[in-house]
Image 1 (cartoon, one colour):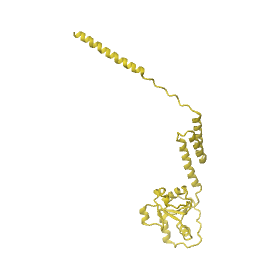
Image 2 (cartoon, one colour):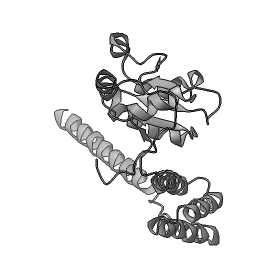
Image 3 (cartoon, one colour):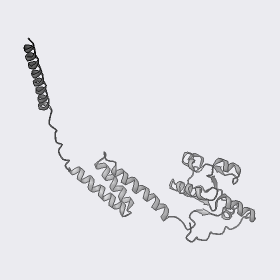
Image 4 (cartoon, helix red, strand yellow):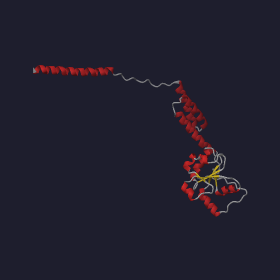
Length: 229
C-alpha cells in the first residue's frame, strides 16, 4: 500500500514538474522578440533645418547678429518642435542689444556731474529725478523732488516714469553703482534721454557743500573722459 502511494506521489510530482516546464517553454515561445528600431534617417526637411541652423551659428560666431537672427527664424520655421533655433535667436538678439549699446556709448558714458546737473536745472532743463536706493536710504535724505523706485523694482514701476521716453531723466544712488545698472536697463527699454549722476548723492552733497549754486547762463560742455572704470 505504501509502495502504491509512493508511486502515485512520484507520478504526480513528475507530472507537476513537467507541467511547469511546459508552461515556461510556452511563455518563452509566446514572448515577442525585441523589435529593433530602425535607425533614424535624414529627410530633406531635417537636412535643410540642420544646414540653416549651422548657418545661424556661423553668423553668430562672426558677430553678424542680424543675419544670425534671420537664419535662426528660418530654421525654426523648418522645425518648430526643436527649440535650438530659438535659443540661437535669443542669444543673437541679446548680443545685438549689448553691441548697439556699446557702439553708441558717448565719451561721458551718460554721466552728468552735480555741477552740470544743477546748471541745467537753473537754465530750464527739468529732469525727472529717479532715486534707485532702498526706501530707508531715501528717507534718510534725498535730492529734492526725486522719486524713489528701488533698483530691483524698476521694471515693475515703469508707469511712474515719464510718458515720453525722450523726457530728461537723471538717475542716482549712493555712489553711482546701482544707478549705472538702472541706466543700462532703461536705455535698452527705449528711454533715450537718461543720465547717471556722477558720483551719486555722495558727490552731490559734497559739491553743494563746497560750491555756490550755479546761476542762469551758459552751461559748460563736459570734457571727454579718458579710459577709467
